[in-house]
Each structure stands twice: as C-alpha cells, then as structure tokens.
Length: 72
Image (cartoon, rainbow, N blue to C red; front, top):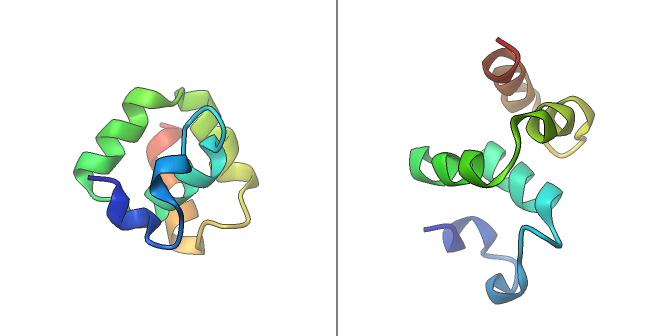
C-alpha cells in the first residue's frame, strides 16, 4: 500500500524507526486515506504537529491543511 509513495527509494530499507520524518512527510504530501490512517496509527500526533510546523519538505497547501486538521 505504501510502496507507490517511495518509488525513488529502496522500499525494503525504509523503517519508521530510522526514517520517521521522511516517511511522514512523504505520506502527508502524497498519501491517500489508507496510507494516512496507517501513518496516524504509527506516529504520535504531537510528532506530526511538530513536523508540520518545522518541515521544509511539505508544500504550502499541505502544510496549511495539516496545521488546520491537527491543531483543532
């Protein structure tokens, strides 16, 4: 389900333990409902709020959307 978002990486080498920021940013930018559900089950909401506020890899619309959704 997530492989399609990491076309440019060796998918088998990606783990949340090693790359939580990279994986989270990619899914927040490109993910569908299923991948977002998976992300929210794997990562703490506070981590995602901090990530959205500090990330330089999220596009402006994505950043604005997640700020609105996570900070309510």
